[in-house]
Length: 89
Length: 260
Image 1 (cartoon, chains in turn cyan, purple):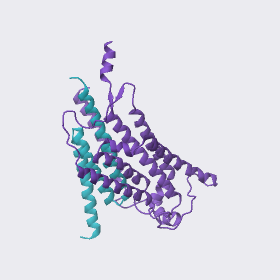
Image 2 (cartoon, rainbow over the protein chains, first blue to last red):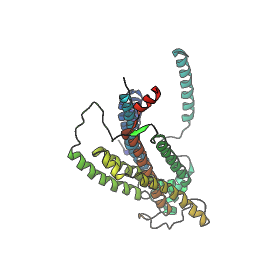
Image 3 (tube, chains in turn green, brown):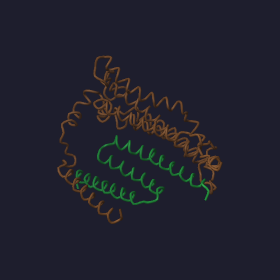
Image 4 (cartoon, each protein chain N blue to C red):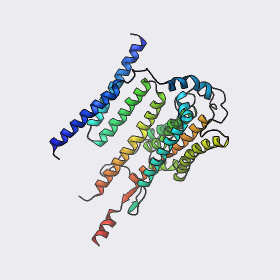
């Protein structure tokens, strides 16, 4: 198997991985579990950008997907939980 | 509208979308076959014209510098919008920071986590600066480096507590860095006009290809972007943390007011 074929297989499997993980994230109903899944999706997406020779975009996706998005969603979920706990039953 | 109707409408829409998608994707060029001349031309001339070995950064901060200014403004505006939305309102009170569930006893953070987290934060500062400063040579640049730098306070919070997050972030400073970053970008473009060239022309000396202080305004604009992004993301964290950990609705007072 030469390098080009190997690369094609790598690209194909990463694309399939993106499809599978994206579907799993969409099918997750619990927001908390969904955030964790979404960060994993960001990781797979980073791999995809890297395999398709876009390291700049891969770096952006890694930083934003691992830091900014989970932070904002998790803090929002925490705020909502505090609110519902503070409300009288 | 009952469920059956909804499903019918959905499937009609889905079939239409599938058709349009297939139609649009049918004539796409194959993987790795690029039809336009623009990318090939840039690949050939960018290193020679701009002395930047990373053509992507040359495109972002020079050939397409105006687009990046637009993106910067979008980021700036959305961070401002979040800060406005999450501000302290009249019926909010500020409690001591509280970051775990009421019903759960949370163990102290171990000293190993604290020590390693702090050491990692130092490494992260160096890494962020490295990515930011070498954008014109290797993958990276202002945006990526800025986000990495902005994650330093978050790491400190995760490794220790909210107090250490507050110690390294100062709202006035963060806001100033963010605003200065964006205005530096815009002003650097205006300076070119003063020299009689179009907006955002690369007017600084280009330097030697492959060295850090090369590629003229690309390097400067990358730094300005890094300031804006780092400031913006840290500000975003600050307002989110403040809203979630500190601000509490004054429910008691509100209920009393309603009763009276």
